[in-house]
Image 1 (cartoon, rainbow, N blue to C red):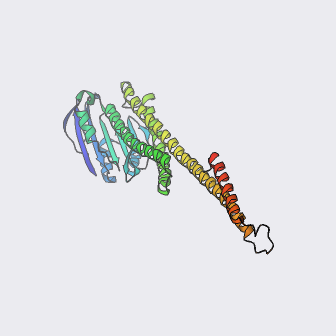
Image 2: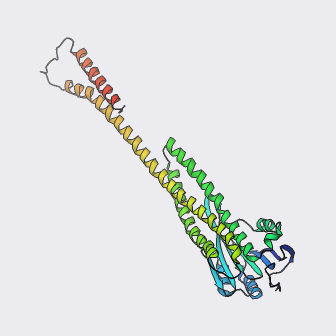
Amino acid sequence: MTVVAAYLYRNGIRVRAVSIDEKIDCAHDKSEFVWIGVADPTPDEMRNLQQTYDLHPLAVEDAINAKQLPKVDIYGDQLFVVARTAHVDDGSICYGETAIFVGHSHIISVRHGSARAHLELRHDLEAVPSRLAQGVDYVLHAILDFIVDGYLPIIEGIEEEVLAMEQHTIDDFLGRDEIIRIFNLRRQLLRFRRILTPMFEVATKFVKLDLPCIDAEARAYFNDVRDHVRRVQTMVEDLREVLTSVFEFSNLLEQQRTGAITRQLAAWAAILAVPTAIAGIYGMNFQNMPELRTQYGYFIVLGVIATACTALYVRFRRVNWL
């Protein structure tokens, strides 16, 4: 396990570092609490945290397994919150998990597979002691907001790629690789939507329910998190529709171009059919055929062929087949 940070805070000021097996007797008001951040803990290390802070064993088991969808569980006067993080790796959206234990005087975040550490967030909060002094519920809001804000660059990056793909569709046919990429993006966005829906429900619970360790004054902050999740949900739905439109539009353009090529081939085939038919007739090996001994027959036949082909060409040009 990597103990990223473990500190005691009083009135929004960092007092000192603490160890994960050190029990701190904090004041009864919200201004004094312990904030511990760990990454990829072992079962034994999680059991140390469990014994020190009286964490519920079911919540500890979920935090170790790291295979949960976003949720909020209540265990007595403590909360257990699971949020899913997301980052892009080699063109694909990868997911991590952050489990958060919230008590009256402690907040413990357990990260698995997250590409973004909370050090920057901790520094930002420490820079505003009045905010940090409001207690663990405001720290919980800051962590959830930090996680949700990480979704937006991912969706914006996909949006840029989709818009470029949409412009390319107008200019040229989509290749096999691009079509495969469209279906991969649709599958990734569908999976992302399955993460966003429970994340929205988590934020909604903090807004509408009376939960331990969460003051009524903090609900407005969680409502902001819910708005951010809703915004990302809307962008995901819009992108899925755009990807569908790009694929359908590409098919329509391809059908249109194929139809135009087919008409051109049919027109030239009709034009070439005239000399082919005439040449076929006069190429028959019959001795008694009319006009075989006509003095100017050769030139007359060539003139008929040229006239017929020109007439057909003009006709096809008028109907935009050529």
